[in-house]
Length: 277
Image (cartoon, rainbow, N blue to C red; front, top):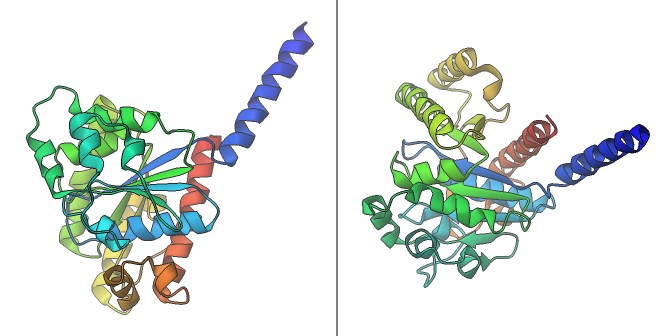
């Protein structure tokens, strides 16, 4: 009898390991920073595309009322959006739109009203909605607004991991320190599973002394939390957004595509390591 229980334990263990490594275990990742212009949307859109190209089922949620991620994939005004999910608790499946490579829940300008909503426990609505589709995706990426309001807190509460884009400027580095304190507060009070997956340096130009200094300072302070991949400044990234395409669709041979391909590989490696323990 003891042998049977030992066999059952190891059978369950390997079943869990195999399924998690094939990402039946969904990973929810918020791309967040309370400072604007650091590359949140660019990173969310291109990371989603990169993950999809590597065979993953990906959902992107645009949680920014400015709807930049929605526009970046070629969508305009939508009748259904994440607004209906957060304000009226609609089934999130009704708001999902299928694109060529990924699925998306679009945003809406009306989403700004969520910040003024006084409903108790509103920060947990998104988390509850995502629990309904946890077996349907390998990755869910959330593009957060440049603020520390209820929308960002909702995203962090619903997430397993956070990726922070960092622009190589001293003020951005100082601001990130404050943002990480907020992450710790959310982890303590609302989502004990939340982990900082890593910090990605964006708009990087290795020829600039300031950028080199910021990078060295960040490495000295955060060490392995800084992704090895730097997202270099590249006009193709902006051009792709203006055309409603991700960088791989627009110019797969560009530096931008090369960088986001590298970041995607690091994201997969880190999530696998964390899932496997």
